[in-house]
Length: 247
Ligand code: ADP
Image (cartoon, rainbow, N blue to C red; front, side, top):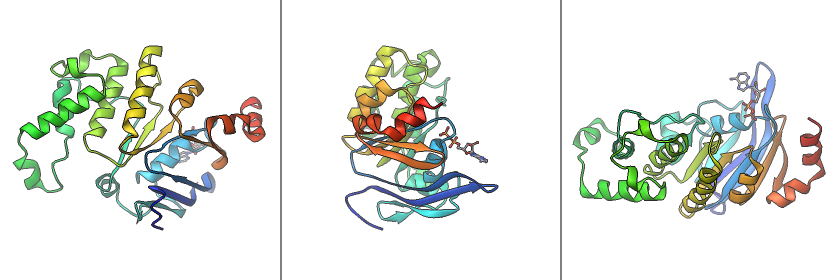
């Protein structure tokens, strides 16, 4: 269960909805500082895999080992505390708050009510917020209301709101959907910065973007792992070519 070469070990994972296997005996292993991209046609089971890892959906069978802990029966909030962060596709920043305040309310305050009450704005928190703002290209926008940010900037802010919690595994669902070419390029740069300190799993359809960010690609089809390896490897895999061209 606890193999230091892998931060995440997904083994024989299956989930059935009324007998339909959305994820079917799936195994994959993620290393520290890896950016793993999951690709596959619509309905392949990609989103369900992220739902299973973050505890939104319960597995029918199989295991999810994260830093030696078993996640399949852990509560969703415990999974967050153990270091798994998830960003959904639509940005959910607080529009009426500033960029600074959005980051501030996301700063971890400990698990107890007293921890939350004792929370004060101190120099350490401010320094961390400024550091994150620089990472997400929003240093100049700290005092701006989130409502005036572009769609892409809101996505970065939401990534910043996860980063400030310092998860060891971050999961992103189509992070560049709706972004301009320039924003996509900067998001690739952002992800390459992020994996210096943690691992990331990304669901993505934009193959150009995948090539820029992936250390390894897992291709899913009908709930199963169809292929895995470098972008060049999976692109040349006849099984992958058939699934993509056959649709
Ligand atoms: P992808 O993200 O690759 O497009 P999904 O993981 O969203 O695929 O869905 C995989 C399959 O599982 C789809 O056929 C979807 O309809 C089905 N599915 C996902 N979640 C549920 C659920 N809660 N109940 C029933 N079917 C579901």
